[in-house]
Image 1 (cartoon, each protein chain N blue to C red):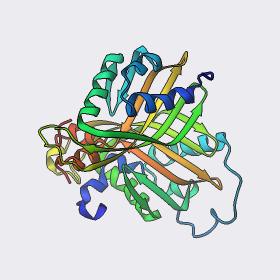
Image 2: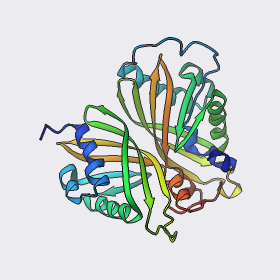
Image 3: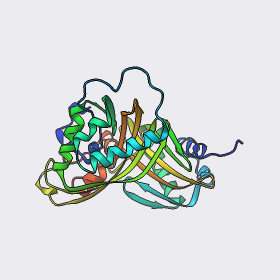
Image 4: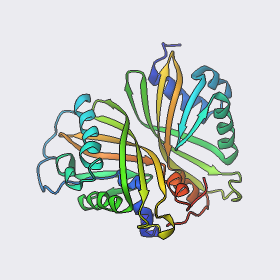
Length: 172
Length: 139
């Protein structure tokens, strides 16, 4: 499915809130650890936003996300450290200024969910000059599964269609 | 019937309302002045829910929501779900294709007095539109 898409779809705001992979080669996944506590899950989910997306700092992923993380993003499955870091950078290029707010956190055991909103002004990158200067507000939710103190798996659903509509690329 | 919990209300929301298409279940499970935040739009009241339910069942034969994960945090419940349905009705001028459409999403519910008082929905509308045969610029 991904192969059929041109690059633009890979660069949407929702995909921004995607995978993260640390550069460290070993460590997070050996052995079997007990499930994370609710509070650990909640804190990691918050740090994913506050330290990586709020600052648009791809390297923050190193401390938060497992090397072999798997992302399920609007029906697609993505893996790999390079993917996420590239996306953080790409979103920073596509939307400037942009900011993410955390609207709610729900946590239970080794899972946590963040409901978030992105506000941004499009730079014209990726969707063409016609989108330059257009302001967007996009909502989404991320679910995280925590293992060994890191985000091991995540699921993302975001308002991609609303984003395109606000950019003048679709009708909703 | 066993005592209702936030989780049981959320499960019945999918099973009874969306899968069975039972409008009466809306009266039981959803507060009259419910507020819905659905992919960036705000909806008020049970009637809007009934309209959306009717639209879904007009568009899809045998629509089916499966609960993939459910989290409970006091009065809030998060459901990560997957949907499958057969495209059997017109949509934005697109003829029924007979295709099986698969969509993922998440619902966050705020439960008050055993009813859904507020909900937030993010679902893959763009992927759904593409599967139904629609096109969006910028791809």
